[in-house]
Amino acid sequence: MNVIIIEDEKPSARRLQRMLAECDINVTTMLHSVSEAIDWFLNNEHPDLIMLDIQLSDGLSFEIFEEVEIKSPIIFTTAYDDYALKAFKLNSIDYLLKPIDEEELIHAIKQYKNKTTNSKLDALNIEHLKKLLGNSVEKSYKKRFTIKVGQHLKIINQDAIACFYSLDKATYIHTIDNRSYLIDYNLEQLMEKINPNLFYRVSRKFIICIDAIKDIVSYTNSRLEIKLHNYNDEQIIVSREKVKDFKQWIS
Image (cartoon, rainbow, N blue to C red; front, side):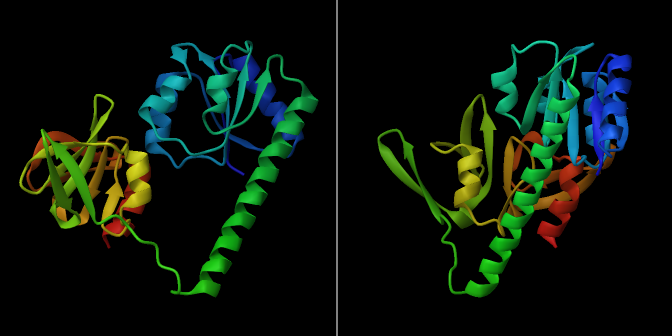
């Protein structure tokens, strides 16, 4: 199991490392600040589990999630309980108050293992169900959007969409004729409605259409820059952790 500790107090980090070793868990990496953690996540495969202190030397660890999409489960560690609600809105397994109690840590690790086992069983059951059903059930995806333009309603068909993007807490469709329209869905809702063979969410701000791609260019830190036909307002960057999945999507 690949586990990392993010803790600015090195003695506390070493103590936690020893406690995890007694649970037969080997810590592969220890990080000590928000900036160091962001850089690490952008350039490394994400771990199976994160032990994360909330208050780090250069800020709150929640700032990491504003820069990097992290899907790894997290056990939060902190000297204060002020941030419990915010922590549990993330990928939280447990919230341990310092000094960390050995029994509470063991309980948190058991919670993580149980959740992981159940997730794997759920995935296996879903795959088994898909095989049983074969092609008898096919999900229906949204093929057009109705947009209000002044006093008029405009229909935008799927094949006219270059991308969806978010800006100032609003979401827009950008069309192949270089026009943007405000829509009522956010990007998370859109991903449930549009065909994943045609559309891919490359970042927190952009969902792009495969037919709108004009060029794919290597970018810093092993990332990719996507250039679309008729969209030049902002750079569209595929994050390092999404590059492999993106390449499979376009292949």
